[in-house]
Each structure stands twice: as C-alpha cells, then as structure tokens.
Image 1: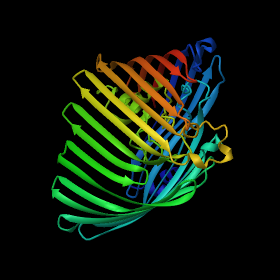
Image 2: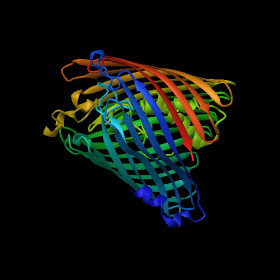
Image 3: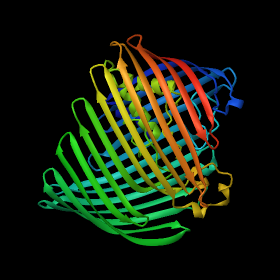
Length: 507
C-alpha cells in the first residue's frame, strides 16, 4: 500500500501537477461457450458488465505516481454473478533529492495459471486463474562523483499472495553499482554486486549472489564496447551451493536518434546468456526486435503500460495491449482516452482489462528464460497494420527440490521441466471517419510442455476478431466486437463465438 499512501500524502499535493479521471464501462456479451469447454459441454451465456473506474497520474516536486482502479461487476444468465476489485498503484518518492528515492506499489488482478487449459474470458466464471495481490517497496540510495561517476545501492522486497498457496511467496533483491564511464577519457570502469533470494511454498528457498567488474570503451561517440567478468553463487541444484565464473562482452551502437543496435553475450552457470536488440524508427513505421536469455523467477511481473514501474517481461498480454493501442484512431490524442479505447478493444476480444500476465507464467519456480519478441507497425493516412511475433523457451532450475505441497499443483513448470511457446498476430485498423474505425485481428499461439520422461503436451489457440469503434461523444466511446476462438490440444479442445457491445463513459 506504499504507493497508494504516497499518492494521497497531503504534502505531495503542494505545487503538484496531478490528473485523475473517473468513468464507467457498460457492456453486454453473448457467448455460445462461456466456459470454453468441448462442444458436448458448451453452455451459452449472456453477461452484463457494470464497472466504474478511476485513473490518475501526475507528479510534484518530490513525488510521481499513477493509480488505476476498477470495480468489475458481471451479471450472468447461466453462470454465477461476481464482483471483483482490480487495481494498480505505484509511485516514486524523492526522500532526499538526488540521493534517496523510494519506489513502491501494489497490484491486484486475476492471473491465468496454466497454458494447457482454456484461459478464462473476462465475462466467464474463473476456473483457470487465481487472484493475485502483489506489494513491493524499493529504496535506492545514490550519489555522483566526478564528471561521469555514480554509486547506487538498491533494495527491493516483493510479496506475492495467491489464492493458490503453491503460487505464493516472497523475494528480495539487493544490488550495489559503482561506475565511472569516463574515468580515463574514452575508457571507463564499473563494479556491480547482487544478492537475490526467494521463498515459495512449492519449493525450498533459493538464493544467488553475483559480483562483476566491467570496462567500457567509447569507440566512437555513437558506439560503446564493454568487457566484463566475475563470479556467481547459487543453490538452485538440489540446495547445494555452486560457484561459477562468468565473463562476456557487449556492444551498443546508436548511429542516429532513430536507430539503436545492441548485443551482449555472457558465459553463465546455465550456459550462454545473451541479449540482442534492434530498434528502428521511420516517419510512418516502427520496428523493434529483441532476443534474450537469462534467469527468471515467479516474482517477475509484466506491467500493462508505461505508467507502471514494476519489472516487466514480454508477455502475450503486453503484445496484445500494444497492438490494441495502435488500433486507437489517431483523432483521439488524449492519453487517458487512448488507454480507455485500447482496453475496450481487449475486452471485446474476451481479454480482462487489467490482467497483467496472460502468458500463464505465474510460477513458483526459478527458470532459464529464452525469449524473442518482434513488433513492426506501419501507418498510413487511414490505415494501420501491426505485425508482432514472439517465442519463449523456459526450463526450470529448481524443479528437483519440490516440497510435498507441490502435489496436485497446476504450476506449468512443476508439471513440465520445460515449456516452449510461440505466437504471432496481425492487426489492421481502417479509419472510416474521424470518429469511426474498424479493426481486424488474427492471432495464433502454440504451447508445448516437456516432462522429464520426454513426453510432450501441446496446445494450439487461434483468435479471429472484428470490431467497430465509434466515438459517440466527447467523453463516450462505443465498441462492437465479434470474436471466434478455437483451441486444440490436451485439456483445451473447444470453440467459442462471442459478440459484445461495450460503452465507456468518462465523467
């Protein structure tokens, strides 16, 4: 609750620039298979949504933050009615200017549990999801020396509380960074130390420590090369402490403000870690590509948009949100209105408005994570095309130290030692007028799980959606959507056709 408390601190409102907006979403959805079951068990449903919401963001001399709060109410014809509080709040307080900041936040959402069962639609009774509350706080102490030197010490604690106890836990991270990028002209140096520990109910507690030194050299003003090396310790393998040396090199090149390329490779205890990226901006087109391999854990969350400050990983939802935001008509320039419009598009496709990690990787495990993401957006006078693709390959590092509480767990990385996923989507928006636009979206996802004995389980999901959006007034937007979802695979053979009409009004 730290972020919410900071947002409401009276002293923070002095000379502040804060903005809040309130509204309500009214929606009606028909589904011919509301719980996404095989055709023999398909059940029709009419659902009515009444969801008031509050959004706010801003900054003062010492504080910046954001708040996103929604009370979601669904009245269903054939399934249980339900209400739920969804929200995010985060903020940064400058306790001592240029020396001590405190970040904090709280979020509450439902997260999908398994990729091998049908995901819950926003209008359906939850079955393959769990209520998750996350709270985090992170003080950072820093100072500068010389022309380009700095020292920064950060501590971060996060608590993850889930309805499913095996997916609950805590984690903490302490880091120390010292660097001087121009200590000897073009040559700079740096040192970093990191301690990470996590406690989850499905596995034994684990921890890792790493210490690294680095040298940087400015080859040209636009290009910087880096060499680094050090050592790391962890107890991921059966609780036994292991020590390994690591080393690597990196290169960053930014020939223009519109072009950035970076590459980094590292020898790690799990093999080769790497991070590659390309970003290119043209007048009417944007291209981004990234490919990474690193260690990850259940603590990492994905923020829905740029207002959130919690650590982010690439997910299906973040890609879908980015694509939906691109489908918002250019005539809507207000950031709050654009966000509302994008959320309506997602809701019309059956995706919950505030679900931050629809990729299903809510896991108690620590794992290696190899992921690639590609996004290309091309914009014309009245048309916009958005192409996106991703792959994910996650192998557990801690599955061999499960405790008895993991029995019967639905954690994918407990059921499988490796989970691979790939998907792509194409989105097209056409502006019929300044107020009206239509959009078409097709997305495909393929997920495979590999057990220790080599057995493979696979699920394929495709979604085709068509929507018509209209700005009915200065503060009112309506979206009519038709969606067809089809899934094949173990535990997820179903077809669903849904039509929804949603009206969002900002007061």
